[in-house]
Amino acid sequence: MPSKIWTPMDLSRRPVEIDQVETIIRKSLVGQDRAVKQALKIFNRMFSGIRPYDDRGHRPLGTFMFLGPTGVGKTLLAEEIARVVTGSPLGLTTINCAEFQEDHEISKLIGSPPGYVGFNQSGGDQLPVLSQETIDAPYLAKLIEPKLLEISQRMDEARRIEDLQQRKIQSMLLQAEAENYKRLAYKRWPILSVVLFDEVEKAAPALFKILLGIIDHGELRMGNGLDITHFNNSLIIFTGNIGSREISKSYGVKRIGFVSPEAKSHEEISGEIYDTVYGEMKRFFSAELIGRLRRNDAIIVFEPLTSVELSGIVDVEMTKIQNRFTKDFPIVIKFEAKDYILGRAKTTEYGARDIAGLMENKVFISLCNLTASKEIMVGDEIRIRIDESGNNLVFERTPRGIVNSRTTLVKPKLFGLEG
Image (cartoon, rainbow, N blue to C red; front, side, top):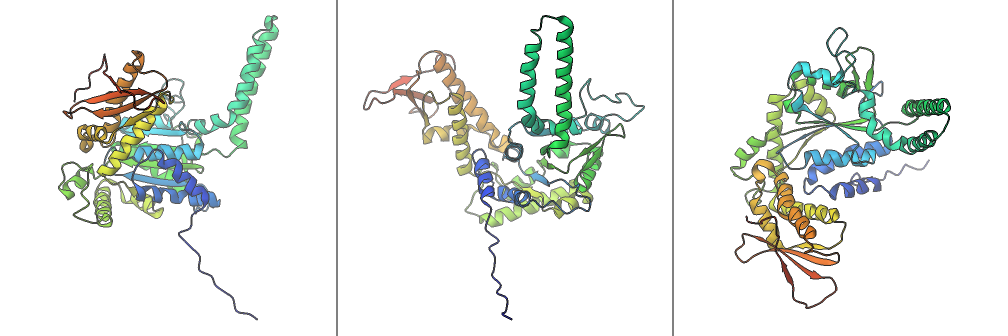
């Protein structure tokens, strides 16, 4: 009998689908290579078709805890994961935990129990935020939209029926058909959802008790004691800013947005950041919650952004501005103009968010003004630079296709550009 031949396998090899997912995420998220690679592990399991280990098969598809300084991409990565999973940028159910700092406010999430004020209500006619219908709505809407559109068109035709009684009957039948189709859709398709608990450290202690059951069993019983929300086809993501101050103190750098690479290697910096954040996490969260997250290797720490990565964020924001103008005229921002934006961005307090705000106020609004005042015409090429003093942005244009022509200086008429 011939001996068996054992061939080593390449664990570093990734499915093609994973590369496609990373390409989609990288269009919006700059930096955070380690965090992205760790988050992408969940898609290996999803593409393999194997569920997380659970005797009943109810555990969520994945659970993540994104921690790190503010404005480094935690929420953005959650939004991009939702875009990939549900196929829509609106496919994310976001729970702002700052709105649930008191225990009694948890009723907004699960509804009030029988005998209490608000039973069977959650802010008027709305369903509880964590009801099955609410978390499934974004993905379900994408699936049933074509059919509901067809029914809507038939209802428009029914409204034109002259006979009043026949018109009412036809309208009632079509409404019933639409509701019945929605109910059947829940049973027919596996609904995928992404639920984000943003700034989870601000939540009341009662919320953490709810989260333990969701992570462990993928189920949450509503306040009425009857309805159960299933999270077995959901990705659960928590974000928090725990450890931000400690990271700043550890490096002795006033601007945590810029990490000096000369003092320590990238691996050393990453390791120290993780240890710092994890130490603060142990002081804030219960051992039960941390244990459940560690079991899934779900604690992902985001690092402060370097100056190179912040410059890349300027490019991303510039691309967004270009797309908002539907490419009627190409826009180029010079390197020194990027430095102008970065030099005025308060990355310590707000991270990359301040860059987005400056790009909106200094660039986008000025371009809107120039377009409204007919200074910019369709087909022009636009260049953004700074003047000789280095304190002002200058917008210049030249008609596309005209070479060696004198460039026309464009000055905004409504919005100043003083630094």
